[in-house]
Structures are given as C-alpha cells and as structure tokens.
Image 1: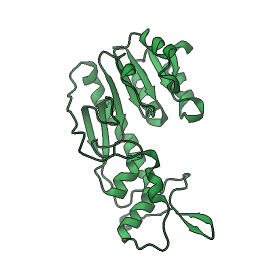
Image 2: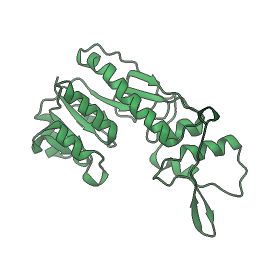
Image 3: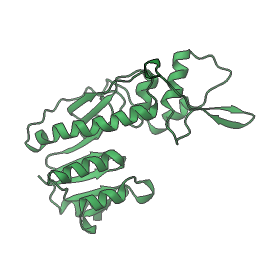
Image 4: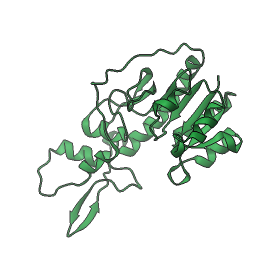
Length: 253
C-alpha cells in the first residue's frame, strides 16, 4: 500500500521509524516548515526519500504540491500530530482515505491540548486513530485506547503518557489497516468537547481577587505545568509571576 506520511513531533518520528523497521516506507513525506517543525531532520533522514517527494505542509493547497502528491499515486494518507487542516480537495487524493492519530479519547477533546483539558475539565483521556473528514477530529473512529489520569499528573506527565500510548495503539492497529480489516465507527458530532489553541489563555491568568474551588485551581496549575513552557500565572505590580506545581504521592516517598 502506498501512503503519504504527514507528521510532526516525537510521536511522528517514532511512528515513522517503526514503519521503516517494518519495511513499509512512505511514498511521500509532508512536514511542517522548519520554524514550526520538530524532529524534521530525523524524519527526513529516516524516510530516505528524494527531495521531490518531501513537501511543505504550509503549501498543501498549491497546485504544485497537489500535483506532486497525486503523481505518487498514494492509496492512503497518514497524519500524526500534523497541525494543518486538510481540505476536501486534498483528501480526495487518497482512495482509501486519510487517517489521523490524535492524542485524545474522541469525541472528547477535539482540537489541540487534550492533555490540558482532560485535567481541567475531568474529561476521559486517551488516544484515537480515526479517519479525517472535513471537520476537526470528527471522522470515523478506527481504534482507541484509554489513558488513566492520576491525581499526580501534570500537563507534561499526561502528555508523555499519551505519546507512549499513541505509538502503542498505532503498532497494534496498523496491520489491520493494511489488510483492510480495521473497524470504522462514526462519531456523533454533537457529542464530546472541542477546544481551540487560544482557549488555554482563558485559564492561564489566575485572578488573585477571585474565589476558586481548590480542586479547580489545583487542576489548572497542574494542567499548565509543563516546563519549559511558562503556563499559568498571576499579575503582581504589572509583572506576570508564573507558577509550576510539584505533586508527590506519599506512596512514592
């Protein structure tokens, strides 16, 4: 099966490296521009593709890129932490559709930062392999795996759990996808939750004059603890004072 790989980040690299180890290289590679890319060099080296088979994710709507990918005669698109929205015309290039590996238990936490919102809103956490449609993380579900949110989890530790589970789920399900035996379950679009990138700005500032329920405040602080990112803060004499929360389970001491 010919597939085009659209990816970014550590999970994107880990999945690609596993696919290469299985003797299943992509026919094309779509990456974020250098200034927005993580593990770009590693993925290019791992895939071993010629430059004309490597595309800029910011230019997917251009005639040149569309024609270049169509010329590869791909069967399937595979997206892993790829942040650009794929339009109908692009999705039409893949007879077997386009899959996305999303670090959330859909339909909960569609969109970015699912690790944050599972802690702040108490929604179920996990990872999902699903088909891409014209919505944001609304396509048919292929497979899912739950991830337990512990009271000691921060945004960082939960993110790492989701990374590991994403790779595990993909390894388990990919053979079924290749064999045409993967299940396909429609989502209820009205169910679940959805967030945009800027939504974290609505919780980041801690108002020193506002009453909080202790649980809610702790959840915000731990969800936004992800060094080296600054996270939540309060304002003192015009200066932002950033907060990081350290959580220790007595069973571990």
